[in-house]
Image 1: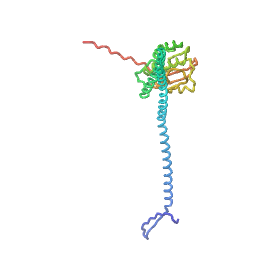
Image 2: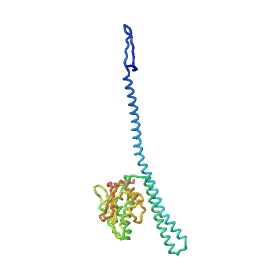
Image 3: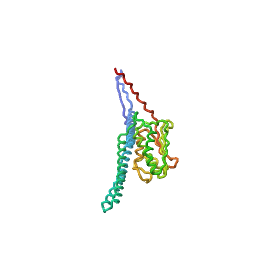
Image 4: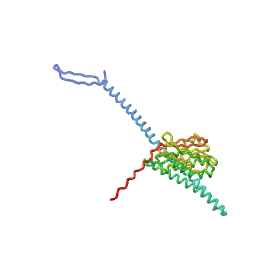
Length: 306
């Protein structure tokens, strides 16, 4: 074929030379096809690698972005919550200094300033607790075993005065027949139960009822706190553990109590359930896997002297 590349070879023969040749057109075509295929496949491989790296990068950065966004929201919320009592204190002081008042007037002003200062202190203490918990999330140690029934009874005893002052009926459904241990430190469990009781008493309102139960069910220790308040709407139940979230304008609290409780539950391996109490209010339920009671250490007998 005219213009086609050939490959020739010659060898000596008895009668002269033997010359052989073949067209290498097909070889060139195959080579060109291979080059094109390599170029296409290389480009596709680069695109796939880029796309895969992009997806992996997005997935890897998603938690970081979520933390950054939550941190920004938390900072904004904290600034707002801290600004409110500070503004009230500043306004009260300015009014007190703007004109002469009698002793009773100054006393009223100081009482309002004291109330807002206490609220400010509570917010700061809760923020510091959460900051420490965020910085050092800890798993419960094997020797940290707490009897939830005992902690629940102690918290009930503390809150009876609060309940009596608001004419709230406080009901005890704690199983006292045997210890109900979980792997958690006692201070954290005490804070959890205190937060739930404080919320329940605040939302139950004057003349309401609060019921506290600690039972063993299916190998799990279950803590329930029920109240007769307005309850938690279903569309808010996933948000109640967000910091500074409030379902309504009920006064009191810092908006951080349930966020602290959530940290305690997660660090102790518990699980939440938010529902409706038999009295129509909110039911806050936490369950943990029951832990074995720590074995008492044997005390060695004294060696005989002499």
